[in-house]
Amino acid sequence: MSGACTLTVTVKCLLLTGANLGSEHEVREKDNTMTNFETNLRVKLPATCIILEMIIIILFATLVEYDDQTNAKYWHKEMAEHNLSNYDNEFYFRYPSFQDVHVMIFIGFGFLMTFLQRYGFSSVGFNFLIAAFALQWATLMQGFFHGMHGGKIHIGVESMINADFCTGSVLISFGAVLGKTSPVQLLLMAVIEVTLFAVNEFIILSLLEARDAGGSMTIHTFGAYFGLVVARVLYRPHLDKSKDKNGSVYHSDLFAMIGTIYLWMFWPSFNSAITAHGDDQHRTAMNTYYSLAACTLATYGFSALVSHEGKLDMVHIQNAALAGGVAVGTAGEMMLTPFGSMIVGFLAGTISILGYKYLTPFLEEKLRIQDTCGVHNLHGMPGVLGAIVGAVTAATATKEIYGEGMEDVFPNIHSGEITASYQGVRQALSLAVTLAIALLGGLIAGFILKLPIYGAPPDTICFEDGIYWEVPGEEASHEEMTTVPVEDVEKPLNG
Image 1 (tube, rainbow, N blue to C red):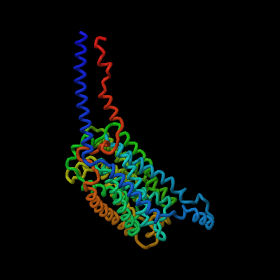
Image 2 (image 1 turned 135 degrees about the vertical axis):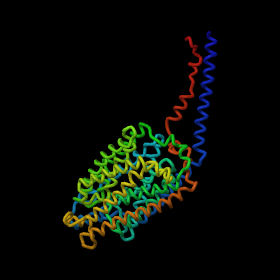
Image 3 (image 1 turned 120 degrees about the vertical axis):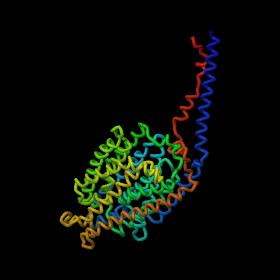
Image 4 (image 1 turned 60 degrees about the vertical axis):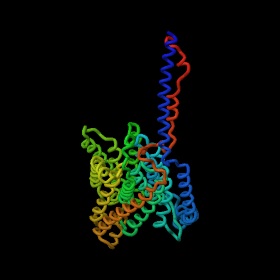
């Protein structure tokens, strides 16, 4: 009987070993698949990071210096001449807003994109990488157009905020190509997009003299449509081979919701960060506050309405609830009124939900735009809505409504140089310029990124961290699966 038991255990062990060898073969085959498609970054990524950072350091050494409120010599001279104290420094007025915006960029955007079940490392990690590079490059590019004094770029706390704004636009585009691009491609996309962002910003704010404090046009519309065109050029006809990973699981949606909450809480600071001190900043934060609240109610209501079973969709809640902050960006500093901001937020939440339900499938099936995060619904359409609201609100501005405050919001109307209706035309023209530069720039960037030299993943293994990251836990679980304790094999079944 004991011999029969031993024979039985031996057979079972052989079968188990065979199964484990098969599993090991599958794991190795999967690993080989991930490395056979030129996705190894040993040379590409270090070369790109080091070269870009060396260029930036050289340019900073040559062109960048502290502004008067940051430079020790000039600030103390200014204090003496104007009887100021250190607490009059711009830092104390702007830095709290900068902190909030910085959290949005690195935590809000990063965690919002962790909804993909196997792409959490890349969502947060590549967000970190792109943002760290883009804010440096943006300081230079925006400085060339806005901050040159005597041949030098002057930087201070406000330039830090503006650099973060530009970075936000790049991260919006990142959402459109999430899971389908390599970090090298993303860095090159940032080089191109930041440069064009600065050009577009200069045309809109300096040449056309439009108002866009919260960036409905310059940040959200530009970033969304730039990214969508890049996604179109990089269209993957066989992306359905990775469809098993192009989705969320319970815990990944929960992590993404962390990003949503951070963005939702700090969005009033985002929109009001660079507005004029006093009533302008106060009003912008308040309009954003109520727009977001109304948007959230619309999001929950329409999410349940468009569902076949009347259930809430976490994708809708994570994204559409933020559309109110996007849509009130342009008109936030204007006399939009509290109920007006609520109407804008409600409309933004509504079109965002309808976009996720009906427009996203249409864009993918008919126009071949594979928008991973749905940036068209969160940033694109609400950004356009915000630009339209801004144009209408500007065109209806009157001295009776604004009083002497007109000088802060619409200085050209206050001086009599232009009429309110003409300011509205400028706002509308700015939207057209933004769309044109974003679409053309995205097309150029897309074709550059399409070159097969950047270590992009193949269609079969997109949305997968294991291509570019060492993922802990997999090797340990594999060893645990293939180990058969000797004492268990030798122990008779009857004890």
